[in-house]
Image 1: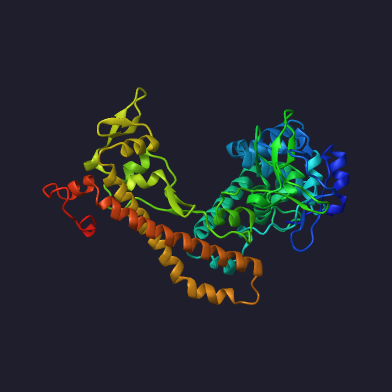
Image 2: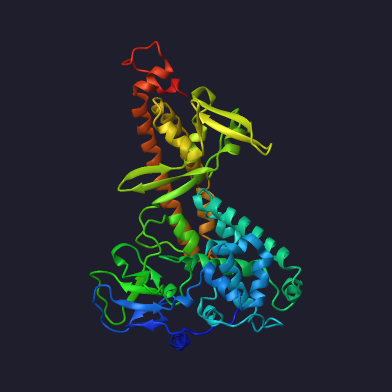
Length: 476
């Protein structure tokens, strides 16, 4: 994407023009390779000191985009042409960013749309955001066996679908033709769409009272986790975005002011959304693995039709304990003989509906089904099946990681490879392998415990006394 950029040295003038209050801080270039950030200009120690106030009208959210569109017919035309996608926060903001960059570019034949504060602000944003969506094929090869590989493939596919939908939607708008014709100055490309996606994902904040939004100036603050987080973002009583010094924190002139992008976010999500892993990160924290219902399950189609859930589960590691969540897992663990049934009913309009029930009681959704399973007298049986499913999927992922190690090591030695990409990818592999090994061991211990439960022993062989030992291979 060809963009007009402004130096950070021009930022104070833009901030003053747009009534942003900076109290003892400034946005400036940092030493080293960290780019720009927020830096203290004086010693600060007051608890809850407001370091920065950004007027509400500068917050970029779905509501503000559509408000701007009321007086910008070009923006409004694109939003309306795109349809439902532009009614989401992500869709509206990405289209808005694209319009600010493309419509006011010196390389384009036309300057379209009404200029606003964001028209200039985007010129301060980095020319390149190092997210994995920009990695080359060789770089992505380092991710084989990690949870990020599947997430990245899905993201690139999703971005492509969004971009095709955008191009198809605006073909009927006359002034958009110069974006669509091959070889023209200012042509709209897939890389343009990836750029605005990267801007949004790496900078959007979940702002109290506003929701997902981009907040100029505050989004210049870099990430630091745990006790290293210096400030918090919030909204004040007037809906303005504010940056507040954390309780008990002190700053010296020249210190960097940092925020957290999410202390609980896993290594995969940090690299996926922000393009880096902290040096201090010693745990993958969490990861998502996909699963599916076995093809030999006679109720597979009915289950996937009646219940909506992400087809996978999330592993969590905290305080040396493994936990998981994923309602979809239960669909692999119960069947008709356990009490799950499906019925086709006809509603008042004559249309047919698929209804599910558990032991004769109607279940509304998959959460309802999971609650029924958890209070069932046979829950230990279903939980054992679930743990077996989880452990098998974890083992599959470990095998994939192990089988790709040799090729990854060879690729990582290439001198042409970006060192940050290599280091981040290799660290992610190590962190996720540690988490997977821990999970496999924990699931094995859970299986051993569950096999001793009365419910499981009676299920395997009702004629055997409750205190008799049954080998776990019999369950398989």
